[in-house]
Length: 271
Image 1 (tube, rainbow, N blue to C red):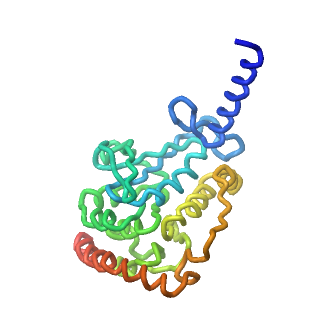
Image 2 (tube, helix red, strand yellow):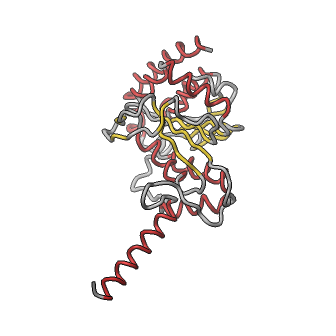
């Protein structure tokens, strides 16, 4: 191999190593590496994050915060479901769980639930899922969700007496869980942190990263993701979208609002 080729390969390897160090993943097995300049130093205990996955959940609810979390040092993210069988999201993307309810660590820094529509309604009625969340939620440092994942937390009895948010189209359901509805991108109340709809998961993830490792670490994660939104339309909330668009979507969501209300009645009987 000529000297120029060797230098090119060395430069490419260095670039790949730098990228992996920024994203917190080792190049060989995906395990998190140490990230300099954050409060967790060498010898600090591993912190475990359990992110529930389930059939027909919304992938972006999870991927945004998961990307932020994996930029942090000494963090292990577990994608948790009943089995290790592949789970297909509502957009057709298939993910592989990395832990089951039985193998998921009991001591969690973060317990997280993503949202969806049909998938969310199903797990709101699933006693095995709700039992797992209730048990892990008792000991987790932070109990969290994005989008309609908060309805699943509510069904598990984990939002009673807490301020919370969810996707704007289903926020009216929150008070049925004895939670206080808040119209916001994300809401913090003691150790409960809930995000609004879908893309709010990135804001949520950065906020949680800041609580875990400080603002500099969260800002680094934001820069790694190049999260600098400049949408082509101002239609991302019912306050800015055209009225006809809002009402059209509200009508399409109405059946799921009704289903969620029915699921609440079943969940309340468990409490």
